[in-house]
Every structure is written in C-alpha cells, then in structure tokens.
Length: 410
Image 1 (cartoon, rainbow, N blue to C red):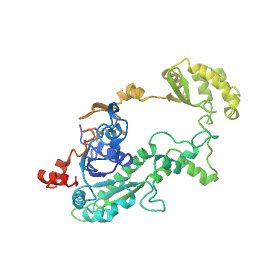
Image 2 (tube, helix red, strand yellow):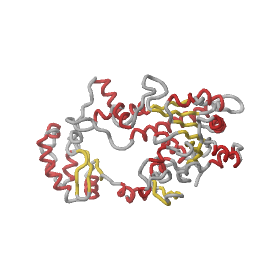
Image 3 (cartoon, rainbow, N blue to C red):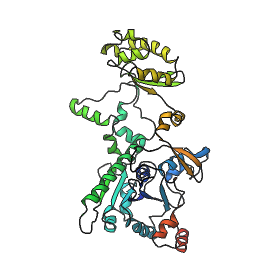
C-alpha cells in the first residue's frame, strides 16, 4: 500500500456525536494521525447511540461510533481539571490540527481559546464546529438536526403542498457539515504550510469557524439555487410534492420493491419507449407541458405505468429505463447495496476487524486516489485504548497514569 495523502498530518480530535467525528474520520481515513480525546468513564456520547451490534447496548458496540471513528486513537482526559488542562496544552504543541465541537463559550471558559492555544503552537489550525458559529446573535442558541434543516430553508420546499413541511430522513445536516469542515480544515492547513514565514520554514495557523446553520445555506440540496431564485424573482419557492415535477416522477411500486424514474415533458418520448408504448410518444395527454401537469392525465398514466411496473422487478425496470435513456434506478435497501455487483467491482466496501464485534463491513472511500489511497488501517478505538501510548510520548510513566486515573484526570 502506498503512503497515504495525509500521513504526515497530526490531528487532535475534541469532537463528539456526528459532524465533528465525520470531519476527523475523513482526515484519518486518508492517513492523518488522529488522537480522539474523550471524557473519562463515558467517552463520546455517540457510543450510546444505536444501532448496536446484535442489539446489545454497549459503548464498544455502537455501529455509528464504529463507523465515524475508524483509524483514530482514543485517550481519556478531563479538561476541567488543572492537570488535564495542562496535559491538553502539551498535546497541542505537537499537532497540526485541532478540531473541536463544543458550544462557542466552552473552549474560552477552559482557557483553551484559539488565541491561547496559538501561543502554545503558532502553526495550529483550529477548526471549531458549532450550531451557529462563533459569533452573531444566534451563537449560543440550542439546536438539533431537525431545527437546523428547517432553518436552512430546504424544509419549506419539501412535502405535499397541502400538508406541513417535511424533513428528509437521517442526519444529512450533520454529515454534510462534517464534509464542509474537513474540506475547510485542509484548505487552512495548505495555507498554513504555503504561507508560513521565517527561516527555518514555519507554518502560520488560523481559526476555522464552521457553522452548521451556514453549511445548510450553501448546500447543493436546493438551498443555493433557491436563494438565487429568490434574489431574481422575490418569490417563495413553492412546495409541489413528489408528483408535481412531471409524469412520471419519483418512486413507484414494482414487483419486488420500488423503481424511481424522472419524467417530464422533454423526457416523455423516452418514458414511452421504456414502457413499450412508443405510440404514446406524441399523445397530447402527456406530450405537452399542459398534459404533464394535469391530474386527469396523471391518473390515466398511472394506470398504464403501474400495470407495466407490477410485471417487473426493479432490476428489470432499471434495465428497460436505461436502455431507453431514462434517468432511473432502483430504490435500494441496505442489503441490495452490500450485494450490488457494481460496488464489488469498484471494491467499495471495507471489511474491518473490531476486538468486540468481530469482522464487519463498513462503507468505503468517498473518493478514490490512485497514488495516495484511502484505507481503513484500524477499527474504531476502545475508550482510552491509547492512554499509555500517547501519554507515554509526553513522558508520563505507568505510575503517573495510575495516579491521574485515580484522581479522575484520565
């Protein structure tokens, strides 16, 4: 295996739950040496989140934690203690990047603000991830995935026009914010190394302020286009629902699940070929913009379409749609994805051996690099697994660590 892209980068990870850990996971999986600092006894709260291996709630069996923390090392440290605060500063001296996801007031209250840590390590890139950023009237507001998605704009466009707005499932806000944070952190690190001054060469760090709220305003999930649309027309983007974008549009049931296709006026001749009815290509009920928005036309089409769908599997529907040039695909389950031959050819999935759960399959690289590859080198760490290794580098003996453990510092 070739040397990884970030093999010379050292990261101190002071994040928890999803957004911050996903940021540092991206760095770790591309080779960075990431040391995760966790609370003594409890660790990252994500350790208590499902799904759990074999439905057994256990801090070392959380699937979410295991996925988000591959290739990291774990140490425990109480930052509120004087000794813990001192040790943390010792750790900061030797890293390139610090990523933290506390509320904006926390780091400064601990005497660990960027200005204070920059004095310890002038080349430090410190990335702070918070709900609304380090400044502004919303700075100290409490929030959640659901709230941030609504405040970010896209929820107002989701769902049926006659019903309340809807949120897309899962934790899309947190994962997308983690991606933004990783990219911004690497930009800052490149700048630090490229713009450093002095002889011998020295880096010049900076503070990266990531607002989960703001990442939603620049998301590709219609927010940017919606904001631009409003600037030009001063109109609110209407909620038109999944069936308001053409015939057909969105998932429909088929023999073994659901099939998803994007239709519409310009795509109609292809849809007609897909369902084996080229005679309908110029039928005014569907071949015009007016026909595509008619409830009566949709009802007539659904009768024809559903009959065709229920005679076929989603794989057969996809094959017919792709042959006709239709934008389409199956609605896959997790099992479908793991067994899909495309991903096997692409060698996407990564098998990871964990000391508690054994060998499991994890999602693989978000991007492939030919010379400096993504790689799962180690499973997610056990809580405090690397205390002796990391603190030993700082000169702490086994006896020192035993005393620190008894006093609640680690």
